[in-house]
Length: 85
Image 1 (cartoon, rainbow, N blue to C red):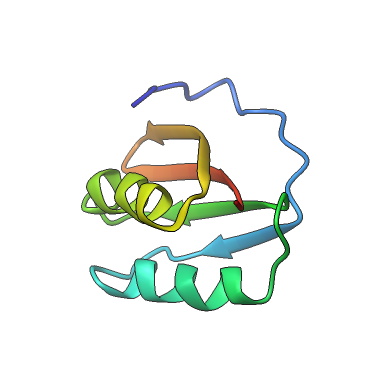
Image 2: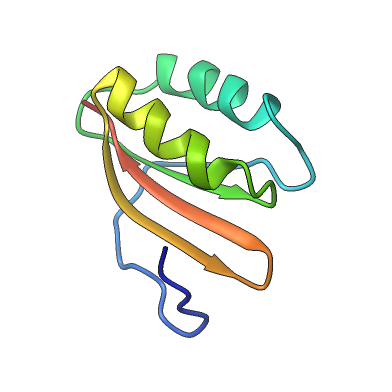
């Protein structure tokens, strides 16, 4: 995971999901609900504070055929950009 406090990816995301303060399994459950309302090719930005998302988000993407474009951590905050497959 990249620790880039000053560099944020420049993705044109369509939807943002803030799961700050939530712990497993809630962030992944909310991601499941959010992607149901999105279309293939759209980009979802996920903000999390649960360290388990480092493991769970890549598995979520792999299992469901989404592309994890970026994964970063800075000051206990995790940021993911996911292109829906």
